[in-house]
Image (cartoon, rainbow, N blue to C red):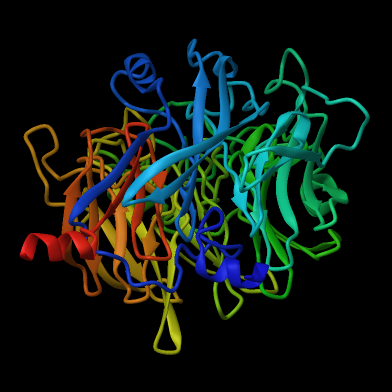
Length: 548
């Protein structure tokens, strides 16, 4: 029988594959020859697309796999509208490969509901995790349901801190399981009736030990260096473009609110047991922190994401005084919307989560609006020192490929076409070296580009290609990168940035930034338009039969 630590090494058990979120397992992935299976996991896609003008504004679970078993989110109920997600239901469906068919075996229903709309435009993610004998899935009241992997039976509810479930407490993240079997996730208690306009009533990092014992730590205590909830935090200038209003202008401020985890942020766990998560002020996404927590949930350190970048006015933006640039005389490098060095924001529409590298460094993709909404991939040391950044980080948890005694990061790099430089009404003009285009980029540990693969599937409507609609790429043991595109294809990209192959899935589809995963036998599991796909090569015995 496999031990838990071995299970986490050879299966895709959670967000990012394992507790470090590296987006990789030690397998040689199969060719993208055939769609071996497809199953609808969200029957409400067409209704959701109609409401969003054709886009699909949903974050879906990573397909989880272990041997011949696959576990995937399953959505039911009815879909009312963006203003009421909770008429839907969520659960986990188990599939098993039988006679080369992926057959549905059972569905376990959860009573989880997402946070109310208002903070995020994208439907938040419902995301389970696997152990050797159990499936754990988010549930109501900030709790987790334990499910028997064989039968689908609900075994017990974990993570409750009161005798009755509190409907105003929500599980707001995927679940992370470390090598010792501890479960970690984020929970948030919102004010009934005005969840996003009032201070939240509690925000916690929750830990469930293997014996089911639950403990939690308040984000207020974990981020002790953050401004107090009633303090004033810098916001943005009024939209009197171009910005800033003058070279010495001071941006306004407003109440920060208490700290909480960003929606969809999945805690990562390093080999030494340190938990990494990301926090922000409830009312201000620009006041964010990368947070390190000891295994007993005592604070270790928290590092601010504020004022880290100097690539705004006159750098990534056109020269001051020109279309898309800052006001004439603005200080080089500042974010024109607050006239300060750029800050990594924690956007509740994203799923970006920390990645722990072999050398202990931590990477996190933050949002920034001043650079055409591209964000920044930020790098921190194991002791919390900010080290460097790369100018794309929006809604992506990069994959990490270990090779030749070092490692590389693989991320999407969407240099958006038609997006104003730092406001929706700003010019779309760009500087040389930051032209519009859609790339998959591999970075060194220091965030230096090693290669890029550019989307060249161009149409009259998409003259610079299609966005990479992936928020967590996958990479196999050869360094082959697997990503989804809004052009409807699944791509395999070789080291050096050359196309290996691709396969069309279902629809050319905007948004729906989804993760994908690898099975232990090298199959690729991915999604398009609310459908789970298994992709790979024809089984060997069928190949032999054809040759005969």
